[in-house]
Image 1 (cartoon, rainbow, N blue to C red):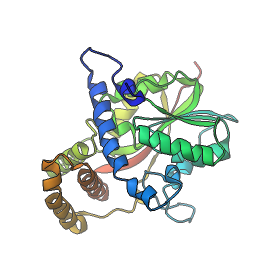
Image 2 (image 1 turned 30 degrees about the vertical axis):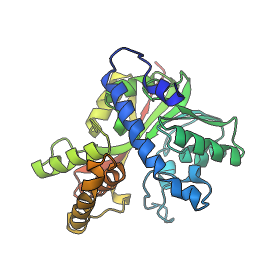
Image 3 (image 1 turned 135 degrees about the vertical axis):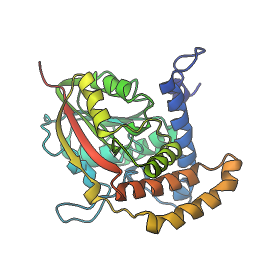
Image 4 (image 1 turned 30 degrees about the horizontal axis):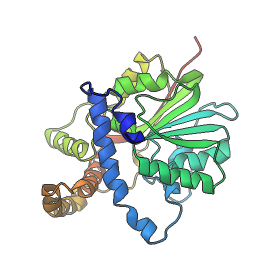
Amino acid sequence: MGCARRAICHLGGMSLSASDRQARRVARYYRWLDGLSWFHERRGEAGHGAIPVHRALADPEGGEPSPLVIHRLMLEGLELPAAPRVLDAGCGYGATMLDLAPRLGGDWTGLTLSPVQAARGMAEVAARGLAGRVRIEVRSYDAPPAGPHDLVYGIESLIHSADPARTVAALSATLAPGGHLVVVDDMPEERLPLEAADRLARFRRFWRCPVAPTREGWIAAARAAGLDLVAERDLNPLLQVRGMAELGPVIADLERRARLPRLLGLGVRREAEIGGRILETLQMDGHVHYRVLAFCRHER
């Protein structure tokens, strides 16, 4: 049995929980998306593990829009020790760790359900001379390493959780006293018009996001885990998004082109594209906000 299968089927012959079933779905989802990126290597493009898979933001300090901007914004106002112990809960190819570890020092562990992401990321870790300081494990963030960690964060990853309260509790349990949990994700508004709610449901289905908590939902889960909200930021003003007037025809065209691949069970890439466009429209309309929520485990 491979390491990815062990990571998400730890109940053996017993029936799987909702979280375990969701981990399987997400692992399959990223296995398809990882497989579709084969052309990068065929074209000789190096440094795949260094490419952030999260979105570009405008730089409030005047720099170029970049997927790296969020790394600075999510840590604003947080006090971290020298050489922090850090857990990236849903690290993808490890780009965030590759960017921050050389600047902050410390010990960094990333978790992914994708063996392909882990392999590509670790190749880049070695190429950058960070072996021993940065590692990527094929493991669910619902069963994280014990820590203690000074910082745990999830960038556009915790939205995949089938049980966000359980996920937050598991990650929070690994925090050192004074440690921080940072959630960077797309958070729907509490009450949506019917048409927007339908768009949100389609986005969640296409991006394998069964719950997609609101801001209030994340805060409630963190408080239940003994954490206090210490900082937050609405990042929607920094997004580069378009509305339905522009994207409606694009989405309709993608839906048409997705019909046959989906009938053949090959529609993951198209669904990911459609979900991304739908999300843009929801952000443009203010129905979903891309936010940073930073929590702290204060010493009692």
